[in-house]
Length: 305
Image (cartoon, rainbow, N blue to C red):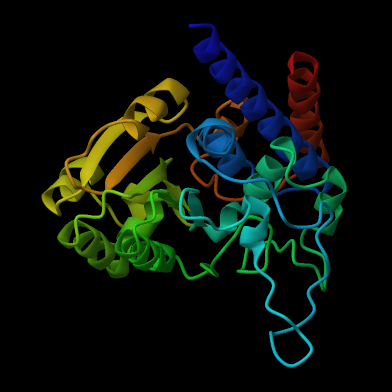
């Protein structure tokens, strides 16, 4: 019982720090992807602290500049090095929603895999700490700026690992908007066909996208029903309930790929964000008065964390 309390408290602590550090960056830079930070803090904290079996980072604590496309004299650089070495018993992490890059970098910092100084390189010319993550960005193994491609890559990795007899799991983080893409459903069908129960997918179901609520752009209906109909093992859970994540991660899916549908609140912890509905995708301050209000919300959060 003591061990369980310890991990849950640590995950909650890291989630709070992710939300605070991400919020701080948004305030210092006059806007940013705050709703993604609000919604994904618990799932990223869970993955890095509890869910994934990763080795220590093999990457520099302060990310190096982008040295150019791999070629003669320019070796391939993988952001996956921040997730540790590749080993048959170790897990792999495929990060799909590239616009969640800021929450990912902050999670790496709070998990002790990247230096806080690395965040100063975020969205700077010549930096690998990109606004929209690419394969050389910290924590990212594939370029997934065109949403929905990463699940296909992860499926190939999971199949290859099973054929080699690897015991490690391939974890994938996705956003719900990716289920508006046909490639996602082809990938799910393939995962089910090959009975890849060595892949676990956690989806941020915050029901928001660039142009507003998903229902107003392209309704996708019940993800749980659709995924199960495609042969997956999909379950809806509270997206801020880390113990629910853990129960599902330990579930025997009977040869089916697992999809944890984490139904999240895109204003979690920053209730003032509710004033920005219906467009929560990217926070832009409309006035100094509005920014001052968010600054007060940040200051209050900082006192609690």
